[in-house]
Structures are given as C-alpha cells and as structure tokens.
Length: 211
Image (cartoon, rainbow, N blue to C red; front, side):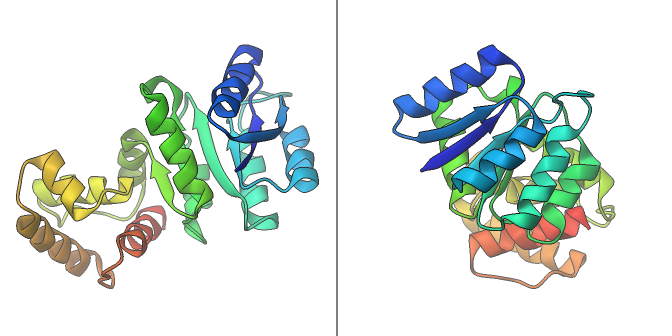
C-alpha cells in the first residue's frame, strides 16, 4: 500500500514514515505543506494520504482544504485526516458527497499503533474511520437527533464510528437482537433506508450527520 504523508512537524512526520515502512507500507512522499501534498498525490498516485489540518503558511486549515481538493480531483485516493483539532465544517465537506475512503482521527486519542494502521487500511480500502469525538461534533452540527432516545443516540454514535452490530452490542453490553431493534428505530426516525451492509449503513448515517 502506498501512503503519502503531509505533516509540518518534522518529528511527527519522520515518526509516521518509520512506523509505516516498518510495517510494510510504501511511503513515496512525506511533505510539510499543502501545496507539496497536492503535488505528491498527483505525481505518486498513492492509495491513501495522511493529512494534518494546520500547515504552512498560515497554520489554519490548509491541510483540510487540500484534503477536500484531493477527494474531488483524485477520487481513488483515500484521505485520513490526522490532527489535534476538530474542524466540523470541513469534516462535513469531506463526508458530504462521497463519505467513503475517508477518516478523521485525533492525534492525542490514538493510543494503539495497531488501531491506527487498521484505520489507515480501512480508509485506503474505501471504508471509514472516525474518532468518536469527531462523530459527537458532527452529531451536534448535523441534523437534529432530538427524537432519538439516549440509548439510540449511543447506538448512532457507534454506528457512525463504523462499528458492526456485534461491536455495538459488546460496547454497550446488550444483545445483538436489541441492537438490531435500536438500529431499525434510528433508521425510521432519521428517514434513512435500511441496509444489510454494515459499510452502506455507516455511509448512510454519515451522509445524514454531515448534511
């Protein structure tokens, strides 16, 4: 798998390069600013790009704007935003039209290398990987969920993270059958089509939350 890295902090950038190459990934480019990221994606055709949000010259939202551009101009390239910050407006833009092959993880909340690598692989394969804190921000900023019960909101948050029914059941210590009932209620209340596919189900939820 080919991975391009955009991170302006040199130690973090080199650490990501070493972490990924040690695990068999190819890193054809590791850059420090958004323009270099755009060029690297154009020139190397990676499977996925890891993108920080705040990079030179203004250290505001250059990385996220570049991520949006990559999603538009290179639809086959997955994008994993890896940052200290939650920027809901651009997260919604990343998810709005094609909420697949995209992830958003918060640096301080990634405690396990295996989890990070799994998220990166999932995004490169067209899946999603969202930090629970990002999901909570999207739920607050998206369409109202006031009609859901507290338990349904818990289930919805776990669905948006990409959890299967079995994973949700384990996290909430309830049976898979109870999860299925909650999921059906959520789809009905949010006006979403039901689906037997976990990935399509997550994408439907994300599309709703980012709308």
